[in-house]
Image (cartoon, rainbow, N blue to C red; front, top):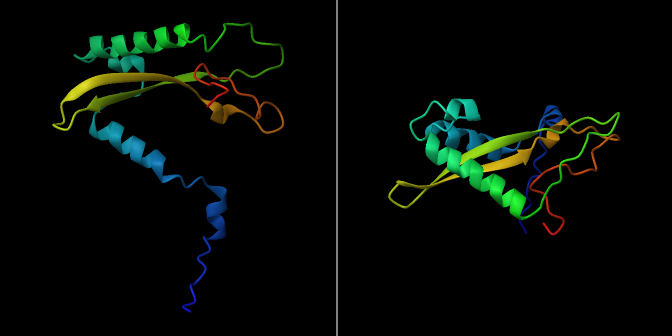
Length: 127
């Protein structure tokens, strides 16, 4: 039986989130030249397609009744949202669809304060 060496990452890596998928998403956005905010999108020639994708996302959120507008309770910190944009391409590399998603910036939550709460217009209990 062959003995395998146990690989133990260095202790300094415990202080960092080493999720490689984040870097892959950033690279895709860079290569496809996708802006990260709406004001940058408005300057582009394909703005009408992005605007329609944003409207489609908002219609979907309304139709699914995934959120309700309420007053922020006293003493609570707001978890804001961010738009995430993506171009879907077919096998030839031609853009076939523009997608916009509204996501919560949950990294602003604090342990022992609001960490176990979910504040997102796209959250569903079934998922």
